[in-house]
Image (cartoon, rainbow, N blue to C red):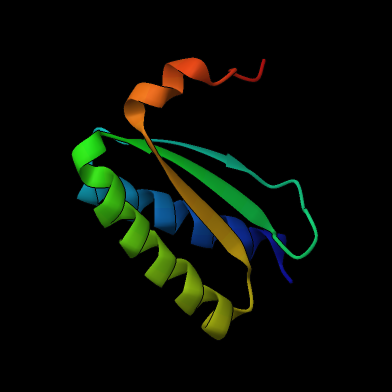
Length: 88
């Protein structure tokens, strides 16, 4: 698969996340693991976690079916972000 196309799709997902929840913070890694091509960690206010999880699940499922890219999006409470080590 074309890596530029994958990055374009991930940027589109990040854009949709920010439109839905401007307070959200995303961190994306492209280190392949098994069949996952990209991992998007999303940190959002507690009241937005469930909605973002549903939205991103729908988006990534449709991308897998239509584009063939396996992208995983995990949504966490923004309050948990301070407990996560920040890569250098």
